[in-house]
Image 1 (tube, rainbow, N blue to C red):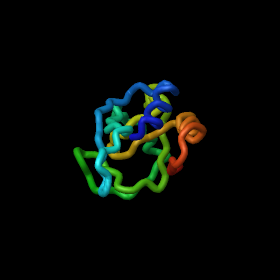
Image 2 (cartoon, rainbow, N blue to C red):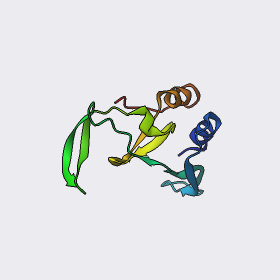
Image 3 (cartoon, rainbow, N blue to C red):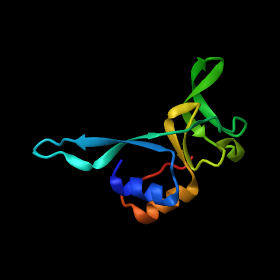
Image 4 (cartoon, helix red, strand yellow):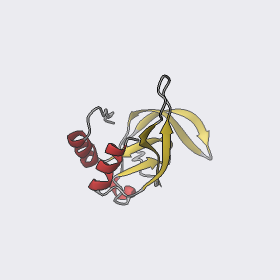
Amino acid sequence: MSLELLTTLHDFGIDNLETYAANIRQDGRQAPIQDYRAVNVIGIVSALDNEDSSWDSLGIHSGVSAPRFFHRLRIDPPKAHGLLMFRLVQRRSLIIVHRSVKQHIEANVSGMDFDLL
């Protein structure tokens, strides 16, 4: 993650990010690019609104249908416990970002794309 995006998130109050130094090496460049960080989003939350969401399943995992692809994803806000950015238990590779965070990022960082679910 770029330092610009990381600073923007921090300034907005997102504090559940664990960061690590990262040096990115690019072919043809002698020096590594150093203004990026490896980031882990802390907070794996079971906030999926199962009644109002639909997905293609990977199958049953620990007695629960594991989503592969969401056709419709709805978050149950009380289950998010006030977090504005988190990973979803049902699909840990997916990072959920609250609309207010999206808008703040778009106003301060160029080149970001979001999928609305």
